[in-house]
Length: 66
Image (cartoon, rainbow, N blue to C red; front, side, top):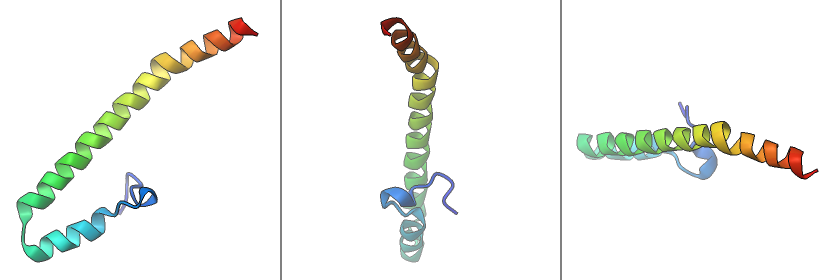
């Protein structure tokens, strides 16, 4: 129920969802999901950048400094 492990950071999408549905505000929950998806995509993009560019550069520098 927490595929992106937000609960570790104190973020609980389930709790917000329940509150929003009780108020009957469908657009609010959709907006929240959209914002979460954008953040996840940004995180994936940063992770990809780090693994594809920064990590090889760090390894190269470490090898050549020693």
